[in-house]
Amino acid sequence: MPVAEREAMIPARPYFYRLSPPTGHHELAWLEFRALTGDRADETAPSGEPTGVERLAWARVGVDVQRAAYITECCRLLAEAEDLEGLLRAAEKLHLRRERFRIRVRKSGRLDAPATQEIERRVADTITGRPDLSRPAVELVALGRPEGWLLGELVSRSERGWLGHEQRPRQYSSALPPRIARAMVNLVAVPGDTIIDLCCGVGTVLGEAASLGIQAVGIDHNPTVVEHARTNLCHHGWSAPVAAADGRDVRGRFDGAVLDLPYGVSSPRVDRVCHALVERALQVARLVAVVTTEDMRELMEGFGAEMIGVAALTKGNLTRRVHWAHGMLSET
Ligand SMILES: C[S@@+](CC[C@H](N)C(=O)[O-])C[C@H]1O[C@@H](n2cnc3c(N)ncnc32)[C@H](O)[C@@H]1O
Image (tube, rainbow, N blue to C red; front, side, top):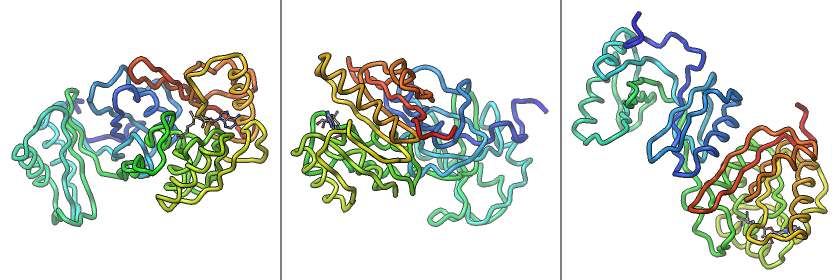
């Protein structure tokens, strides 16, 4: 059968994920994809910096992406072709039967509403069963890209719950954007886990964790900031214990640790404190995510961490790195 228009023949990675990282975030989006899908195969990483173009990543498994910060949809591949006509022919051959289905068309580049509806109608014509546009039981996604067209069945879609979390009474110039905080939480925990943020600031990570059903504990050595974290959590109806303390003194065992290190002040004393915080995070958790302007790979490996990945996060002239590693409590 020509590759140009084939029914999907159960490829090694039959699930496709649509990723929508803003400029400068694509490496973190990829780490999040690996965390959610458990896919460790670096060779499938989309390459290059996206410029507003959606990206596609493939995995062996289809997982729930509701909690994702950067993945928008997960679909199971049904058919693929080089162009739309080929896809329609491949879809015909599948003899799909679906009740209460809806078709969604996603296409890179511009497509006006009548053209979208026309494609939806033509894809729908290949399916036996009743469409239901308002409360569908099944959604099929026709995805058009310069490389070709895909037809997939939706497995799950993200909720974009982080949108709106920036609205809070207490702001902080060094606070993480909620989307980055959410991705970092996803690197180290799943719902039901407990995590610690050793430098919690005004509570961005704590809030994202709480909103995902992850218990979080926050520590910051600045009592004013701790008060602000409590105010922000309360504002959104989230609860998380927050204490004014030195993160270097943290004890206990956690599923994950997140560490957003202070930046902008560089001195041997601050560096020593930061390094000690990293070491402590690694000692108390199974999985650790550290964000900082420095490249901390060597330091973390020197503390015995097994690195899983590093993502550069760029904004203007500022580059920060998210370091993702197994901590000392990891069983792997
Ligand atoms: C980059 S900010 C964290 C911002 C936080 N992620 C947020 O979104 O609000 C770094 C924080 O580390 C705290 N900090 C610095 N040294 C600390 C230490 N030894 N123990 C605990 N917190 C510390 C600072 O007070 C500051 O709030």
